[in-house]
Length: 338
Ligand code: FAD
Image (cartoon, rainbow, N blue to C red; front, side, top):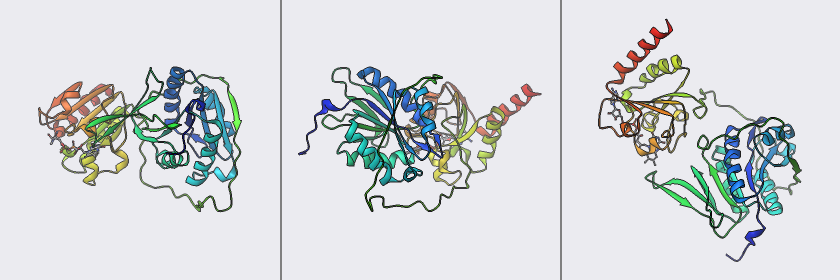
């Protein structure tokens, strides 16, 4: 490539502070936690990039979660996410301030914005990372993500271009600690667009009426797979989840069967979860499922097949029919409550 950059000019770790309707997305707090580790390892500052309309008030939250500096673009044109407006604004800021590392959440917005930014900045992007580490010798980031259908983990580096960019799956990294009253510097970004540069207009935002589920924040998850045998099986799982103050989730096979919405799917192509307790009910334990739940604190597996792979990672394994085991657990819980 003709465009050779002076890599030593690039300094600092940036986190895209994705906000929706004036609320910082939870993945941003995770990225600030991870960004802090990377910034300390390299010996540079941690910065957040915040775009929106009337969002200046959110800067305090970003400082409290560890940002040393917030690059702020506050403008009516940035009220709702639009690929052109956001990628042009951040692209110009990257050109001017030259961060060494840029992290984005692998949300719908991050997955759209990341590749556009990478193209604008003529650099690489590693999508959907599950682990980030600094190589102690050359201080480059090693970006790890599942590859080949989740059968192996690939570690990717970006040796010749800057910034090094990654999107990171929500729910994978530890959240940053909140430090009340922590302060930092706000740097205002210039927001201007040429005629016709923004090719889309948001006419209306229509929210889906389907039930939304927050698996990433759930402490207890009762998850079901093909072993349920029928969609109604989720009603039984819901009863157990309600008793424990948890939520229901599913394997991809159950989602593909049309038994439950995709938003409930755990795994490589679903959500990554880290609850205190994960019940795997009638789930075989395919590698792609395990990739999304193996970091749960306690894994309870219920399966009729004692050789099911899920038992290899379960802390508590119950060999049995879930339609007998779960009602028995509910009955015991009822006794405790009575
Ligand atoms: P099965 O593998 O059919 O297992 C059903 C289990 O239920 C069996 O172990 C059986 O013994 C048990 N059982 C049967 N009856 C009962 C009973 N009455 N009581 C108790 N146990 C019973 N999968 C995901 O989950 N998430 C992903 O994100 C994901 N991404 C993928 C990405 C790619 C690229 C590919 C190729 C696959 C992906 N998969 C994913 C699919 C994955 O490979 C498996 O096919 C899927 O996880 C299997 O779902 P399951 O465990 O529900 O079904």
